[in-house]
Image (cartoon, rainbow, N blue to C red; front, top):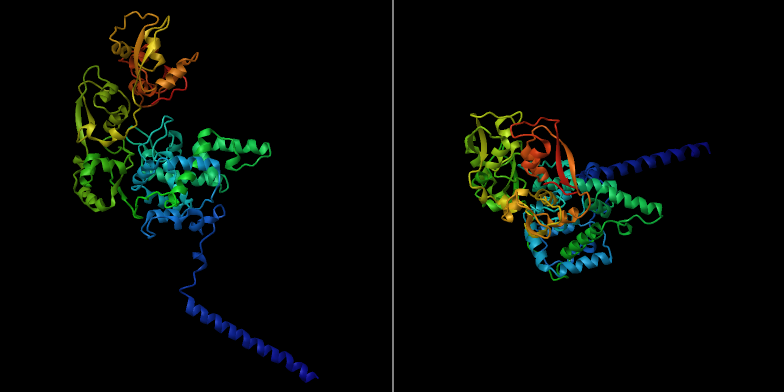
Length: 534
């Protein structure tokens, strides 16, 4: 019995050893054969908790690619876009209402596609890089109709319609030379970063992120809090938001649904290649844009479609020193830029300072800004001396040839008649409509010394009739603002900022043309309440 008891564990041990060896041999063979086909742990895609759809898009259910009328080739940007769709399908009457509107305006949808062509590839790159649902690549349809120079009355600008403050928060410089909100390259990076942050704030809820993009984080968060206090649902469809925001998200969802199901809606998709249209090139320093267009052998209008952020005839002195050049012209542009002498990058005029000259008047004469003149001439302040010379930046071509003049937002001038009331003076009426007393006299072929009579009709020309008339009808709509002079300010800059005349600034502050402004000095400026400055 003892012998048998000893042998059993021994047999079992030998058997287990042979089994383990066989297992090791099998595992070794698998590793040897499949090493190249088995991904390393480091290469396994990391699942994003907030948006699990990104890793496994379901185009057949969510995007309707199988219903599309376009050729399904890897080179097609539409296919790439629809493959990035990640939002679930929503059934809501608000979406249906917007969808019906777009289907009644098919020409608009056709124009949108053609406008999107130069920019869609770049947008998709950012969308994919930041793990954003592909539907949001079409957000410029809602924001700007894919017009990079679009400008709203609320001071929003560019493809993505950034207001000035939000634009600055996301690194979009705005000055006399350049508006980063209209820069295709910079604004797309800023918008996708902002959208990604909003989605993270609302725990991956992209509809709330879109609502916040339109109405602001404060309003959306407040609406959520109100619903929470009343034990109501806090999803986008359940919130009480501004009217514009209530239709904003449904508009995007309607547009994305139509494009993804083009065949079903009898819409022909404009072919867009899934290849870059432009290349960002570092130019090093300031450059005349007409010269740049010539070196790229590109029509000036087409050149400005790619570089609408530059709102003057040349790039900004302090940058960005970057231009977007058509891909097929990039090599030619680089070669020509390398051969261009530094003195030919810009054209300069010499202005001899005369007695009585000030930087404001000189800037106005040459259609430039005080800041620009100071930057070019390295002036520490606005003080200049008669007899000396100033360098003035000028264009190689006449200003009217520049596309930025066509692209700039200019409200249509409004002409209307104002009925004089008892006690009205030229000065009172001018303040009501943010125009000068002298202009009112000229428009009506009167003298400033003329006596106005109640009931008399006066012609007024203004871009802001509706807003100003509405405000001027309110009591106490006019008020004095105490403005603190900043370093580099001139009276000309301040008058333009608040849309008042230099004469009025002199009168309100009891100063003369010979006096210089000092940083920290306080000036009285009479403004209309709530009327935005330009």
